[in-house]
Every structure is written in structure tokens, then in C-alpha cells.
Amino acid sequence: MKILTLFSLFVTYSSGNSINIEENVGQFFSSGHTNNWAVLVCTSRFWFNYRHVANTLSVYRSVKRLGIPDSHIVLMLADDMACNHRNPKPATVFSHKNMELNVYGDDVEVDYRGYEVTVENFLRVLTGRLPPSTPRSKRLLSDDRSNILIYLTGHGGNGFLKFQDSEEISNVELADAFEQMWQKRRYNELLFIIDTCQGASMYERFYSPNLMALASSQVGEDSLSHQPDLAIGVHLMDRYTFYLLEFLEDIHPASKSNMNDLFKVCPKSQCVSTPGHRTDLFLRDPGSVLITDFFGSVRKIEITMETINLTDPIQQVELSPVYEELQIEKYSYADQLPVSEIIHQKPKQRDWHPPDGFILGLWTLILLVFFKTYGMKHLKHIF
Image 1: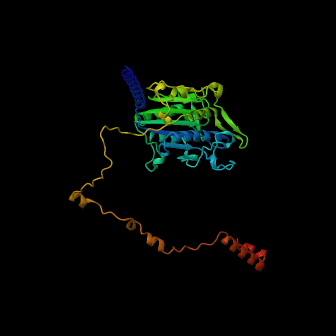
Image 2 (image 1 turned 45 degrees about the horizontal axis):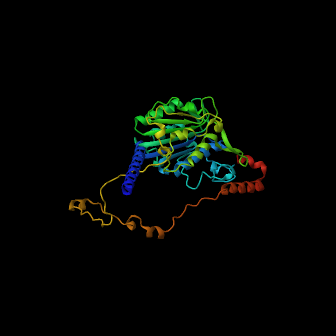
Image 3 (image 1 turned 120 degrees about the horizontal axis):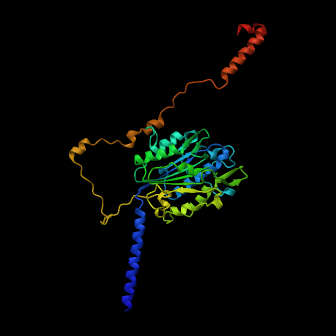
């Protein structure tokens, strides 16, 4: 009887475990994406916009921590706060008081900086319309199985976001860019987050499928700053991004938190503004979308039921005589690069140039000799 009871409990436990495993597997494959990308953009220049750079670098730090590599991140910073002459601690950008967290770090890879951060370049990155000479690090090489996170921060208004305080992108232009991405099969699902004044106006015109959007403020509201630092005279972050990053710090690659949890970040009691979100274009239920579907990274894994023996030595494939004839002759390293010749060769003779100020000094000497010899009355013969 005891054996029968134990057996029934084991069967119940096993079936319960199998159901949980099936649910987890179903949730894992429900997204259908095979790779993750992030486009992180700070659109503001000048020292008093320090917080916008800190916002972007904080999100950059979080997505890298959760597994998205630099090769899949396009980072655009309109100004270099780390090397600004007003920065009391060069090569650092802090997002918390008392200089606790340096979000600049030692391995930041900025793809677009300074005056490269323009509306044109941003739209070209999204749509893939870049010149052939553009390096891979500056391209968004996504496909129809890519989940893309797009984060924007800066100064905005009703229906626009400023770039460099000299130009702006409208909500219509942004919506059309996303539609081009969808038509060109450049994304599977897209998460758009914007931290700016009247941020919700930027997603009002979206019409492309599989797109989810979040904003730090509604139309007519300002997105407020946070964490003032008296030592450097500026605010360190914006409120919405500060609480967003506080939420992301508790996320790890195996987290089960979903988008509904993200929607609760920074309520009006904390943000002062009213954060908004839009999910009507998204095909899945936000409750089934994991945070790591956008902020993390997936790796392509192939499952096989066959046994693979890794202990046997690898057999060399015999080449056919025809292939051997066509095979290109290989060169050794020494043949490709004659190191000994480079080391022992004589240095090239440099052309002689007069040192700086030599010509000016020579003319001064000539004039002094002339004045001493002939005086001022013969000056008219020179000019």
C-alpha cells in the first residue's frame, strides 16, 4: 500500500513538472525571435543636458549586462560628457548621487558621436539605407527574426523630438521609418521607449504591426529630471529612466517578469508626469512577453535526439585529384610579411623643413639690418 502511494505521488510530481516545463518551453518559443538588437540614442548636446547622456549609457549598461553584445547595439551620443572640460572626473559619467555608479565604464563602444547624431543618420540606421562604405558597427543588421529595442532621450514637444538643438524628427517621420522596417522585414517585434517631454505624442501616429511603445509623459506634460548633483551643477538622470533602471537592476537572464510589470514602472507619484504605453499594434498579450525578449539576448540552439560521439578522432577528408589541382597555393606568414626586411631596412631620409618661426625670424633680422644701415627714410623702397 505504501509503495502504491509513493508511486502515485511520484507520477503526480512528474506530471506536474512536465506541465511546468511545457509551459516554460511554450513561453520561450512564443516570441519566435532568434536575435536581439538595441538602438540607443541621446539627441542632446551641451553640459546642462548631462542627464540625457547618463540616461542612454545606463540603458546601454543594462542591456549589455543582460546579454546583448556590442555588435548588436547601435549607440548614438550627441555629446561626449566624459571628456567635457567641466567634468571634475574625466572619463566618467555618473547616474547616481555620491558618484556611486560610473555608467561610462571601460568598454563603451560609441558608434555615432557628436555631429554624426542627426535625424538623417538615425533614419538611415533604422531603414538600412546606409552607404556601402559604412562599417558593420554602424549598421542595424537585423532581420525578420529580430527583436529590437529603440530608446530615445532628449528634448521634445508635441509631435517632435529635437536633435542637436538644430533639427527635429516628427512622429510622422518616425512612424513611416518603422513601417519601412516592417515592409523590409527588418524586425520581428519592436519595443519603442522615449524619455522626453510630451513623449506619448511620438507614438500616436504609429501604424506598423508588432510594435509596442512606452513614454515618460503624456501630451501637455513635462518629463522631469532627477538626482541633482551640486558638485557638477547638473541633474544626473531623468525620473522615468532612473526608475526604469532601478527596475532593470532586478532583472536577470532567467527572469519571468513581463511587460505588464514594466508598465507599472514610475507611477505618477514618483515621476510627477504620467507615463504612457501603447499595445494595440502588438500581436501578443503583453503579459506573455518577457522583459528579456527585448532587454536580453537569445542564442540559437539546435536540439537533436541523436548521440554524437566527441571522443573519436576527426577523420581527414580525402581530396580528389581535380580539387588538389585547383587548390590555391598557400603562403607561410614569412612569405606574406617579410619581417626581417622590415626590421633591418634603413630609415627613410626626411626632407628638411625650416623650424616654426624660422622664416619670420629671418625677415625680422633683415629688417633690423636694413634700418640700422639706411634708416627709416629708405623704407619706401621696400613696400
